[in-house]
Image (cartoon, rainbow, N blue to C red; front, side, top):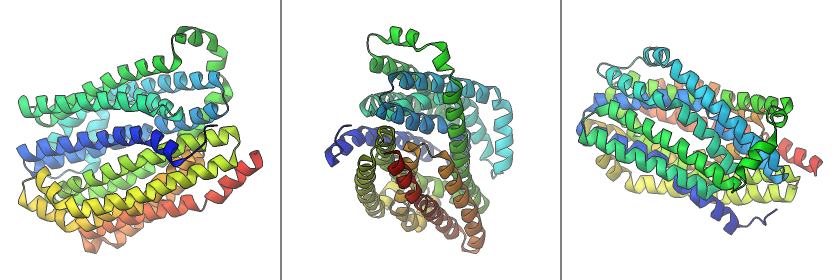
Length: 441
């Protein structure tokens, strides 16, 4: 295995960091365009639509995470045939699930809006946004698998290239459809959908680049029997099912967070959505080290190397903690100016500024749970991820109910607590993971 050093970790992590930073950047452009050209109800509609969409799409986030862990372990074991088989299985599953989501969109959109109970004027914008976005479901879920495969192989620069193309197209179309053509929330949805199809095409090109000139021969040599191997498919399904439950629990927390704000009215809903852009940037960027941990931990376990596993955990942990503290400081220093840039509405700005200190605490409090997620994804320990997420969800809901008298402050305190709950639950499972690798070695 390649010697793991801080230089190696950072070389693998920085393309992910840049690519991940581009993901919330698109959301920020959405907020800025809508926020500066419309009112709190329309901004709230996009916020609600984005929350519902995250719930739908990230239900299938296991396609990225499960493929990353399995690919990393195959890479560590130098099983080239399984590496290729994994992306073919994952891509096929992603396209099939995305097509099913698109077919069910006439049911998903009205049902989700009914559950979220949007305040007056918000529902129509959310409906327009969601209707257009779901046309990108097959491409989005197919790209989840491709992205996970590239990360599992440590091909982070290729992953960055595809991510940059998608987000560049997304931002350009966003400005064209909303700022130029005045299509509002519908334009935001259409632009992102077209960008996702461009990412799928770019991802397929990336697969060919990884496989090299002999890609056709490799595809032919893999054989239907290996591709449809029952044990491999069972492992993918079981791991994915566990991670899907974990993802649903996490999305349940953020969906409840948004719903709690919506119950307070359109201004707190819009203000919290503005602040969540800061949380998204922090989480996506710091996930660069968590994703690196996935690949490094998976490869160490595949190779049966306990020293490599411990070093990967320690080095990614150092970077993660430093990054979390840095983001908290940056949010405190520049948060008010960023809020003013994102929305000129005085009421939204005042509400967001009041909650800014609690928002700023999330990167420092949340970084442990993000890194531990990466460690257990690399270990393909789906059941541990599932159980920790369910514990965090239950404790979060109890905390949210207990803090309801505090209004929006209670909503943010409960969200902060959810990160601590998940980190503690995952941390308690670490000794068993280390013992497992010690026995394998």
